[in-house]
Amino acid sequence: MQQQKSIDFFKVINERHSVKQYDQSIKIPHQEMVEMLEEATKAPSSINLQPWRFVVVEEGKERLKSLVRFNQSQLATSSAMILILGDMNHVDYADEIFTAAVEKHLMPQDVKDYYLNFVTDAFSKMTRQEIRENTLIDSGLVAMQLMLVAKAHGYDTNPIGGFERKEIMEALGVAVERYVPIMLLSIGKAAKPAHESVRLPIERVVSWNQADGVIGERP
Image (tube, rainbow, N blue to C red):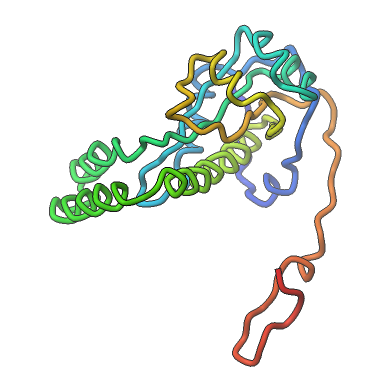
């Protein structure tokens, strides 16, 4: 049965917590997983180039057991592990994306031509490091959106950075020279309530840059 979606955005962001132990009896229907990924990819990206890619591991998760360091519980009990990647060659999809926008009457042909020429020229002048940095930013946006989407569907998640990146990519058949590993995301239904966490007071993390000077701590 498909989980009931939440329609209260503030409930979603306030109740989203990282979960380490999941209910192993819960399986996420394939169509719902597809739906969540589609909703997540409505996240913004630079020039709408959508550099994110996903590898969903539902069966055979034990292949990753030696590669997820201290995240064994998430691996063992989650409904799925999602490897979020950034595609360093995402500019190759520019024509396909812009053409679809023209066909849907979301972009005039002359605007498409302008942007395609601009993007092609800009990427030809960028270093690999510059492309990587842009890719990381955009892929981070989709990762956060996926966690919020999952919560709205009634599922829980845990973003994981502690894993053997190259080895996991090789184990899953991902081209390590093309893709940048962003994070692993465990997803499922929490077996017990997640621990809440604290945040620094907003005055500790924000400064207000005004005409007469900065008020508050500088970042």
